Each structure stands twice: as C-alpha cells, then as structure tokens.
Length: 209
Image 1 (tube, rainbow, N blue to C red):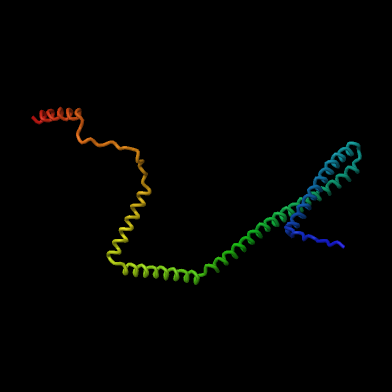
Image 2: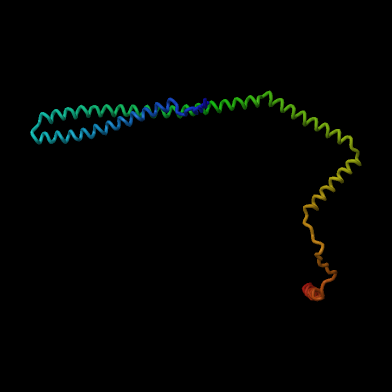
C-alpha cells in the first residue's frame, strides 16, 4: 500500500470583507448591464411606436409607450440601487483601510510596551547608580596611584610621555633621503652685492647733507 502525504494548503489571504466587496461589485456590474439592455430596448420601442403611429396603429403604439414608461421607471429605480451599491462598496473598502490602521497601531503599541518593560525606570536608575559607582571607584584608584608616586617617579613618567610624543612626531614627519645634499649658506655676500651696497651708502649721505 502506498502512503499518500497531503500538503497543507496555505491560509487564504482573502477575508470575508474582500468577498463581500467582490460580490457587491459583481452585483453592481450586473445592474449596469441591465441598465444598458433596458436603454437599448427603450430606444427600439420608441422607434417602433413612431412607426406604428405612421401606420395608423395608434392603440398598439399607446400600449408600447405604456410598456416603455414602465421600463423607464424600472431604470430610475436601478439608478437608486446602483448608488446604494457604490456607497456600500466605498464604505467597506474604507473600513478595511481603517482596520489596517488599527492593526498597525496595535502592533506599534505592543512593541512600545515591550520597550518600556526593557527600559523600566528602576532598571535605568540601577544602571545609573552602577555607572556612578564605577566612575567613583576609578577616581579613587587614580588618587591612590598618584599618591603612591614620588616626585622622581612623576618626572620619569613625564619624560616617558615626552619621548612618546617626540616619537609620534618623527613617525608622521616626512623622511629626507640621505643622497640629497643641501646647499651651504655663504658667509659673505658676492662682490656685486658689495658694490651695490657701497653705491647706496653715498646717496644716503648726500641726502642727509
């Protein structure tokens, strides 16, 4: 005997409201089709009544016009029914939108409550107290360490800090290649510069005189 495994069908996403809206729309479409059919019939009967009058068949024309009048009344009633259906479809669709909004608010409210449970006032105060205790404890440790060091120890610590800072600066500074020779600075001015200087001195003396 073979064993048959039946797969479970996934739950349908179509709600009862969706089915109701669909049914209302189908009814609306049928009424519109009925209206078009009556309008076509009325036009045919109007032309036929006109033809009967032309042929002298006044009684038959009158009977046909009465039938036409009755169908016009039916057409007027269907307009009212159609309007009611349109309003009901609109109300149902809008109610579905409102339902989704309410569901969204419920989900958000539940999530917010869970966050409030995780971040209760007592828990926050406890965390703040523990943080303040840790800061105070670290401050006490720093004070103990500072009190245990002598002036010589402090000087050595500062010297070590300066050495680290200097090493950091050297690491960031660009290296100058060893094969590059920088020009030497001349100790005396060139001869042309000396002559220019001598020429400028008498002019200054002449101006003073």
